[in-house]
Image (cartoon, rainbow, N blue to C red; front, side, top):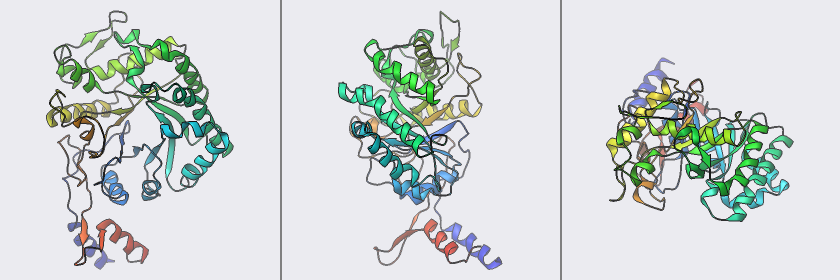
Length: 380
């Protein structure tokens, strides 16, 4: 055993670390793991990175079996996604059961799956059929979980853009767009019935980019500023994200519900952008995410919900080079695909380097080598 410990110390020296671990993510923070890229590390290497960061909550946009298998027997909880293109099929109960059997039941004994997002930002589309399919798909997936005895382990929800609000200022006057009420009211009733969270993708960056002359950069970056006071409640806000969260709570309350928790399924700040994307810099991204992490670590709630800790999934783990749209869309990552931080928020971890043999066809990671040792009984 002493020889093995010496060998393992040598083995650890083969790792190339992106930096020392300064801080790990707290309980109220998860990470979005998007994969619209052609240069990302393998899921097994990502598992090492996330475990080194003590990240225990990950949100996917699909139900990638390679990722779920790589995290078998880990302490990581997953939100998995069911894309908008599947909503029509999911309205069929038998197809919903088949999907849950394949993507949830197959993995859940080894990998912790806690939530399914049925669709993403559906109401950003003007497709009336897609909008109409959303709730039936959510109901069918939930009923499939019930039939398979998984509804106590896995919740069902969908993620919305903040654009579903018709009014967000002041926060206490938050309201959904009138043309969406017919869809959102029954969805809220569903959330209330099954006790699942209401997910919002909230980006103060968008508000600043659209109106940098009127929106204070300090206000959106959690920096010291005068903030604003809600004239109805007299509650004071020193940052935009908290105001946005409370506006969603107010909109939900206006629809008759006070029993639904709001969760931020995406928020972040790009480190690069096009010339017209004002504020998309590494410095601002570092300030936004770094200050946000500190707020969440302190267990803070919003002014309207001070006793409810904020629940956040940061967007995103890696830059994604194949995402369409403006340059900012490809530059939300905390990390480059090689494991180096895009900017410093004091949140650094290990991504195992690949070891190359003389034959370039024989490539594997130190992590995989360690697993071989375990399988062979070298490490017991």
